[in-house]
Image (cartoon, rainbow over all chains, first blue to last red; front, side, top):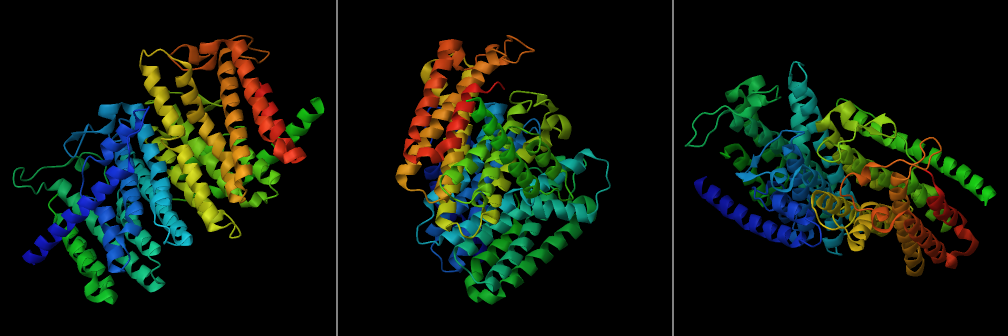
Length: 300
Length: 300
């Protein structure tokens, strides 16, 4: 298991390097306006690149060249970044720091941060169309863009954020249906399309797409449950136990509803189910399985 | 000329009705979150629907069924609406009223207004893919989405907004290059793609696309110049001469640079050039010509 973990760490580092190189290439700062600098600042501010890694790993599983999914993988990361820029705005969570760096509006001002987020959204879609190799069928590119735009919008990520805002401002009792709605939409939808859009581009058959979708939904939920738990219990050695800001407001989280131990059991359950979904792929699913296990064991 | 104007008014009213009906159909308020209400509120808040009308009129000129371009026409209006919602935010222009109605954030709160705008962006793209009839070639749908996403992003509308923000906050001397950059990007790009994306969907040949592009660029500039002038000189009978808010800040406008008379001459010049661009289409260009003249003569 330790060997596996080291192997995965190497795998993740390699993939992150490829993704960062392509994001850097895809977003060229060009004059005369400051908007490109603002867009690039947040996209290149780091992060695990979990979403695009999932796209590349799905392509590999299906023997589909990763070059064919790199544009949509990077587009997904750009839309994810857009959501972080807007999330951090004074009118939303009002965060000044992300990943140890000043947030976009702190550097570029609130107006530019709003516009840069919007521009990343637009840029994501033209990137896919411009850079996806001609060997990928146009019908499949359209289907993949469709899947991504549903995941990003009111039926996906934005819908989850909107529900989160509504609940936080209300005095409504938080129940499991609300928590699950927020988690499957706010984080889950984009993780789901990271896997699905790659499989769609690769022309995978319905059985494979179904299995991969279920895998993605399961690890998506596990990811968010672990995120909630990490926010409550700061697991880093330095900090020991810290209370995160999710507890301060009426935030819908798993630990709040089920406690930490039960939440982690639920996350493990979802990871196991996700791994089970991959049985039809046999050994080829190795890295998607390792990624699922990593989601459960990550400390940050 | 008066007959023509009445004919155009009837034409515009008919087209607006079709567009409003489709926007209403395309944005279905569905639970559980408030986000759909917020999106629909601003999309259905009225407006001339100039952008989607241009798409439909271009389709008609090319003998292409308007059903084939209604989805992208409405998508363009949704992205236009998104830009208005974000423009009105406290972090941007901080406007409480638009078209006589409270702006989105006044009704739904700032956080929801940010997210609803983002969701409209996503929704625009999946609307095109879901609703465009199967008879339109997938390659042309991709090309049209590409054109739209360039027009909406950092190389188009967002780029123009970003430059506008940068200049407004600076003490930089406003020159004609800056004014033209802002106008061709902030307003021009979306008007341009309204015409172009319809022509692309219709599989128009390069000569026709070139002519229509030049037409759209010319009327786009005329539209914005007239907009600037209307902001300075309130031309309604009630108001007489009023000084608009563009004059109060360091806003890059044509009247500021050239004065009102010269600005209107420039607008007329662009309209004439735009009409000239349509010569290859003969009488079939009738309504695009009337639209160009309308842009010059409009009073609001």
